[in-house]
Image (cartoon, rainbow, N blue to C red; front, side):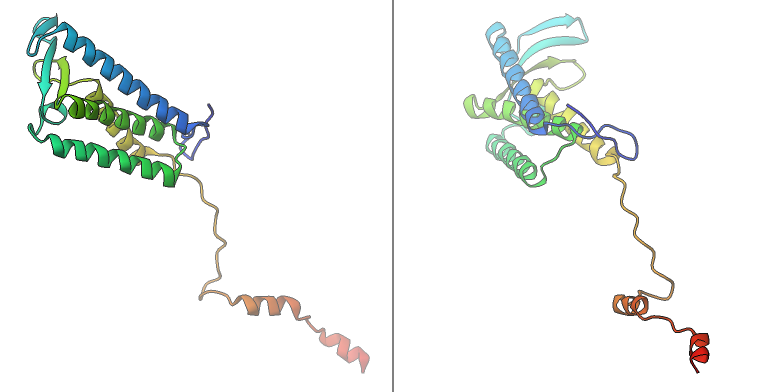
Length: 200
């Protein structure tokens, strides 16, 4: 992997963005599905195990809504939204062929999170959540991927290095020069008045 630097001196490119994107996506999906399987096998729905009493618990929640339990009961809408997001990312990747390190990671995180929760909704009709911080809605690995990826995309949009542009040659004041006139002036020889006098 290598990088180039923009005008702000930030590493912006990777040699294999496709491999980075797919690798990130695969890791998020595999880890998300594995942890969800462990939670479903180890805990009954609503059962909770305190990790840090009163602060962080592992709680088995069957979420029929979006990330963090928002908008419950909209399964078809969430499936359609996930598919549209994945299609949009695929089309963008195919057309833009991005090489940005941050962009490849962020899109991989968002795609992996979308696929992880999409699998739950298609197979089980609801998403398994388990990270419970008591003062925050219960969430899972896929939700983390979506949120971190979205933050990465926002940061990339704001702080992506500005590539230097070639300087455009300034035109003389008073408007654009006629290229034909300029070439004619260069080709027309300048006569020396003294030469005519010597000839006479």
